[in-house]
Length: 223
Image (tube, rainbow, N blue to C red):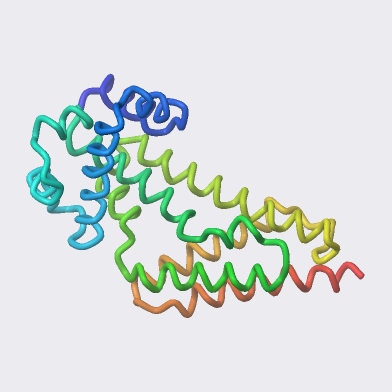
């Protein structure tokens, strides 16, 4: 891939405003076709992995023509994989809703904890986002940016929950919400990484349980 094309892909797929601008130029039918190709590619990767996925696999699965695929993804496979990476990154957060956006009581935190564990238990050892970004590698900075943006968004939502609990008097007001959220997110990611190797969610569950317990205990420690 040439450097100018790589830069174009990075700009196109790491900017929400750019993505929205592209989508506004599509007709309703065009947007539906593009989404069908994107979801078909994502489904194929979830079932079979990304290494051997070809554009012909996507065409057969989505009943689209090669001209249609290249119309919506002009750079071909790599641009499609970048789009899948963003799709899967968005799915990580959507799969945690509405609990992630409603961390307003300890039962709500427990409900979110259960939602996270269930999500990764159902996902199993194959992480489609990790598979896609690993396939794209360091030669595609846009893929790294997708993951970085996901982590920032995820951490910010957890931090919002911490701040709410601080306002409610349930967490030590001296605790840094962003660092607390970062630590909890690091535990989740470590637990998921171990699950990808072992198939077990024990470490993920322990990271969530201990992280939430630490937040709860901070109120007592500050009393």
